Length: 157
Picture: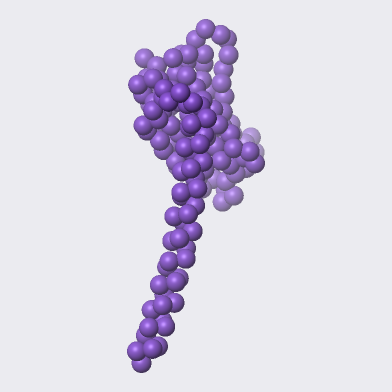
């Protein structure tokens, strides 16, 4: 009787421990990648990305003191990263692209307008091609993008 209970307990422990191990391992690998990309844009340690938010393979980081913004997207085949000096930016807007047939949002983009040069920086925050469950991530990504647009615009004023 005690042997059977011990074996069942051992298997239940394994069923919980193995997935937990892979989740913790995956999170530590992602943290290392994020730190490496932040260090790439910050070789002299002038920026302190004190606020970082991750969701659906996208990372938003901001340094409020030095007014710097870093966006990382792990969805494409190659990791996309954009470093923006907010001292050079006038405004931040969100652009929506919808499918003409179904009227569904297929892309949400950030558009950053530069002060001195007539240039716009555009990068994708949500893309339906990377949402295999048909717009499951749309609401979350849109909410996150609106939140970060507000944070960026508050630093521009």
